[in-house]
Image: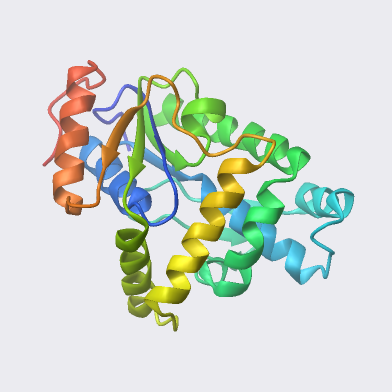
Length: 239
């Protein structure tokens, strides 16, 4: 694949359930760019930690597992794969077991240091190949890619996020209820925003987009306009 339209990095941050993954994938697809879901990397490491039977409070042991993980993530927006070795774990990392543990694992400073270095390497490789990449997570604009040409922080009400997550869980065959998902969303918000290392927050120069009343197409259209306004496209984008 040759270079796409995007020139540089779009950093997309925000809490769970704001539509980051869907929006980021669609935006990357429209721009012929690469796509990186950094959250899937933390989830994959969390799965490896759980499989190893490691105590989540033993930060040294958690870090050792993270160092040994053979992690591979795809960067095509229409085929975002996640593998531990040769095993496809894309479905398993979205399960409740991993969801309840990922905040604790991702809060370990040395785990974040390890994965941020890998994320920056992937960004560099994809930019060299395609010209641009859309990266989503919780610390992209503040830590991973602070020089990104466009930083976006997506927000939405807790009720809206819980409803979206529940619909997604149901579509993927995972049992859940809106009340349980809302409690989990609020728990993760508290944990991620108060952790000592790379807490969830909007970068000072991020554009905040409230998706509570917007559908996916409306958010993508708005972001495409922002990308053009920043002069980050080298050709016409695909709507």
